[in-house]
Amino acid sequence: MSRSVDRVEYPGTKLDVRWIRALCLHVGECVRAEGEVFAAGRDPWCEPDGAAAQEVLEIVRRCPTGALSAAPKPGEPDERPDAENTVVVSNNGPLYLRGDLEIEAAAPEWEGVRFRAALCRCGKSENKPFCDNAHEKAGFVDRGAVGERGDETAAPTGRLRVKRIKDGPLLVTGGFALVAASGRVAWRGKRAALCRCGHSKNKPFCDGAHSAAAFRAD
Picture 1 (cartoon, rainbow, N blue to C red):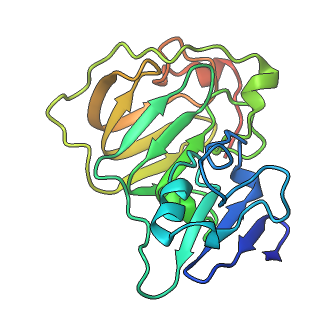
Picture 2 (tube, rainbow, N blue to C red):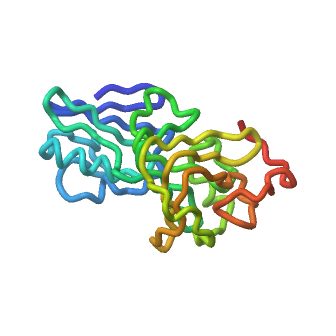
């Protein structure tokens, strides 16, 4: 096991598992998985040789934030993006993205956020544009309903790019489906400005409220 300030690597014979502290929201998908790969309270808590490489990779892919990623040895399976890009508007929480992602401000060593990411929409994260669970202390409330339909003919495929607008929203370009917290595919399109200040009256979309709220973020 090797450590850096922000990254821990767990070596295995068929693949290595990497964990990025700054991205982890402790959702628990890994430790609740059946088997011996992850175990809360164990040191080390990850044993990549605890299951077949494909099973380990499947568990890693459950991580919704990209905090976990896998580096396979030659000949072993590697992670591929989901066939369709999705953005889930969670209940009182972040935007969960999955697909072929290109997120501005992602560090090069954060391999997992090429496929999975959790982005702040309460405006309080200290790790913007990524979520750090600040919405819990901030009392952010939005149930994740989506009222608009967008372009229902748009295919949610290809590279999905996320750019930060200074002191403003997240600009998302590329085909994607927006999923309400209820699980309903509510909107499809190729371009949207999504609120990240927490003040829009038209969440998850930006309505310009960041200006009146004096929101500040790179």
